[in-house]
Structures are given as structure tokens and as C-alpha cells.
Image (cartoon, rainbow, N blue to C red; front, top):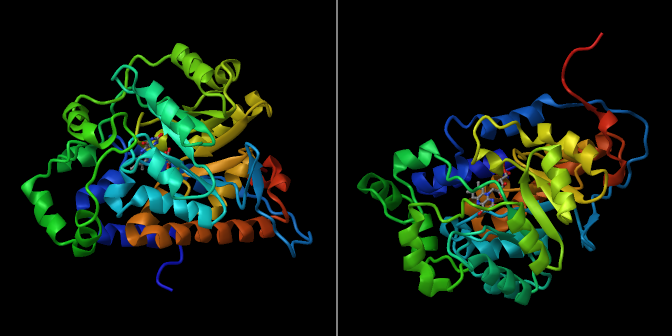
Length: 380
Ligand SMILES: Cc1cc2nc3c(=O)[nH]c(=O)nc-3n(C[C@H](O)[C@H](O)[C@H](O)COP(=O)(O)O)c2cc1C
């Protein structure tokens, strides 16, 4: 088999995608210190393995918000998946279902929330950005409710538009305009052209107004679409409008986690947006432990950022996370091979997780605990 791990999927995605799209997916803010730190800190954290436990059966399954998942992994919200692969948002949601897990659709998805929900049996999660346009998020909440989304994931770390240097160099923006140098590179990616450019017209289907609103949304995108005046009052307002599980995504401090509990959050995603917002922010795995301790089981604590191996998921669970979200990890698979590529990426992580848990003497995810971890420093 040519692809045995996520790095192999990443290499295939790099080959298939036009350079500016690969860099949109792969890149982070400024010097990418946080992007690299998310991965590097997972690698610095070590295991201390006990021996002689019966590990003939290893069960990865878990329950989140009453839903049984075959493993504690959720495909996190990634905008514009439909530009990486034809109907990429739908392919992603279907792959998650085929693998017995769930996925979260981005506000900036190409497909609409209705289309994606109709494409699978079990409801998905929906990620909410509060946009500058008044009333947008109210309409989105209503649409997510009507489409029977299971959980609403409110992303709170993106009020300021980040400078992603790779995007800037390419002149990449949501306006969809392409420079001549990018056009030449694009023309060499024949498989992507056939798959995406010859496919359905690209849009922002989950935006209020849907496809007909596309031009207006694009025209405004240059100034940043996301509202800058989002506060805890906004959170309170959203809580009042959404009666299902409400998850806050982008929390990095125990103080904010406690505040979120006070405002009625059911779940918390410890996340620095995969290093795409504040550069030099600490890694998610470093932020996780103190948040788990502060929350003390009063909400579902999850994390994302830097997961490229099943071992990384196991480390996060041992630190106390209930589940992990991934972004680039599955999106590389999608760009490489569509739905089959996403499924392949999930199964790679599953295999690595099961093997790692077995080697740690753990038969189920509930047996993972912090004493199995070592911070990588010598002690005498
Ligand atoms: C290309 C790209 C687009 C993203 N779009 C969104 C988005 O629309 N909404 C959101 O909440 N997070 C978004 N994220 C952040 C992911 O949900 C997630 O926090 C991050 O990718 C986790 O890091 P990882 O890629 O190392 O797994 C995006 C990430 C990437 C890479």
C-alpha cells in the first residue's frame, strides 16, 4: 500500500491540489509557530508503559452527548472542503458515518447544512461563526435546528482575521480571484480540475440566503466576514436560542472554560484553530490539562490541533480529553482521494490508536490516565 499514514496522505494531497489550495489547507498564521508547536508538543510528550495486562480486546468506542461513536474522534469544521474535492463537505460527512463517528460542518462550507444532513442518516454537528451581517447567525441557528443538527459548535477565536503568510504570497482570498502564476500551476493539476472545476458550481451553501447570496458574500469577504464585537453576551443569546448541546470552540484558558460553564456550555473544544489564528499561542495539548482539571467533569472537554497520529489522540485522552477533533488530518485524505481518502485517514488513526492503547495495557478509553504520560524531561 502506498499510503500508510497521514503524512503519506498529506504528500498525495500536495501532489493533487493547486499550490495555493494546498497552502490554504496546510498553512498557519505568520511564522506558523503554533501550527508546528501543536505537533511538536505532542511529540515531546512521552508514554510510560506498564506491562502484563490482558489486551486481547481493545475497545475504542465512547459516548458523546448520548451518541455512541466507534472511537473518540470527530471530523472538525474545515471551511471550503468542496473546493478541495467535489462535494467535499458531503463526502466528509458520509465518510464519518461509514466509520461510525461524527463530523461538524463549517459555516463556510460549500454545501448547505440541509444538503449535508440529507446525505446521511445520523445528524451532524454544525459550527457557527457570528458574521458581521445582522441576523445571519439567528438564521443559521434556525436552519441547523430545522436540519436536526445534533450539536452547535460556536467558534470564538476568529474575530480578528489572521495573516497567513502563505495565502498572502499567493494572493489567496475568499474572493476566488486567481493570479496568472496560480492559474498556470492550476492548469497542471488535471485530476483536481476534472474533479472540482467540472463539478457543481462553488458557493457558500450554509450562508443565509444560500447560493443566491454568493456574490454579495464574496464582495464583502476582503474585509473579513466574521463579527469583531462578539462577547459573552452573544454566547448567552445563542444559548437561549439553541436547546441542544452547545459547544464552545477555541478556549485556551481554565478561566474562560469556567466562564463558559457559567454561561451554560455543554462542551468545550480546547483549540487554537490549528495555528491559524494567534501565532505563538501555546499548543492545544499544553493548554488541555489545566482546563480538564478546572472543568472537573461538568462539561465534555475535547481538543484539537496537531493530531497526525493515533498516538496523539491517545495522549490527549490520557491528559483527560473526552474526544479529539481533527482538521487537516482528514482534509488531506479528502484532497487526495475524496470520501475514500477520508475513510482511509480515519482507519489509519483507528489502527494506531488501538495498537498504542494495547501497548499501554488499556482495554478501553476510560482506562487511559495521566500517569501514563511523561513530559519528556529527565528526572533522577
Ligand atoms: C483549511 C482550514 C479551514 C478551517 N475552517 C474552520 C472553520 O470554518 N471553522 C472552524 O471553527 N474551524 C476551522 N478550522 C479549524 C479546525 O476546525 C481545527 O480547529 C484545526 O484544523 C485543528 O488543527 P489540525 O488541523 O492540526 O487538526 C479550519 C482549519 C483548516 C486547516
